[in-house]
Image (cartoon, rainbow, N blue to C red; front, side, top):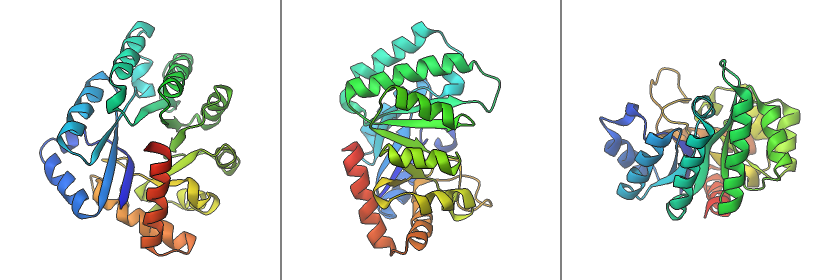
Length: 249
C-alpha cells in the first residue's frame, strides 16, 4: 500500500492521459494520491477527479504565489467554498509562503494564517509550501499552534528540520530523494513515524531524463528511503501507510 500525499494530477500536463496515469498508479500499488489545489479552478477540478477516481483524494487550497494576487474578499470566498465542501476534503493544501519571486509576502502571511485557522476549524491537516521562506513558515505555524501539519518538499536547514520533528509534524519526501543529498539528510534525521512520501507530480522526478513525474514512481522514493533507514521496502510501505492513516484518515 503506497501513498502519494502531494501531487497535481489536475494540471494540464495530465489532460491527455490522466486515466492511464491513474491506472499505472493503481497497478504499482498506490492506494491514495492527494491532489493539492492551487487556485479556485483547480480546487473544483480536483473535487471532480476525486469523484471519478477512488484513488484521488482532495486537498483544497491556494498557492502562495497565486493567492497574493487576489483580494482578501476573494480568499474568504474560496475559504467558504472549502468549508462548504468539507466532507469531500482530506486536507487544506497547497498553502504556505514563497519568496522565490517578487510577490506580496505580507499578503501571503495574512492569508496563510487564514488557511491555518480553517484547517483547525475543520480538524484536518494542512499541507504546507515553504520555498525560500522556511523559517517564517515554521514561525507562523508555531504561533498559530497548528498541530496537524505536513511540510511538503521541505528544503530548510537541519535546525529547522529539528523544529519540525520536535513539533511532531510530518515531512513528505519527494521522488528526487534518489538524487538529492539534502532530502537524503532529511530522511536520516526524521523519525520513521513522521515520514510520508510524495511525487509533487508532474515535478521532482527521480530521474532528470524523465520529463513528467507521476504517482507510480513513488516506488523509487521508497527504495531509497528504505536503504537509508535500513529497512526492506515492504516494511517501509506499512510504516508510511500507517503514518498516512494517522494523519489523514
